Image (cartoon, rainbow, N blue to C red):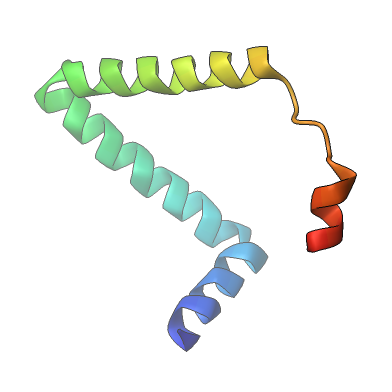
Length: 70
């Protein structure tokens, strides 16, 4: 667990690590899209659908009873 915590702290503090991780994800994404664009389109449609559903539902209201349990 210590390694995971150390890596997470590094990602939170160092913007270069965050940018590198984002570029790595983008590279993997584009390499899959290069082989077949279908996964790219499907993932974008799923992400867009989730975004639309969350926007239509709005923010959940805070229930004061649930806050007492925490």
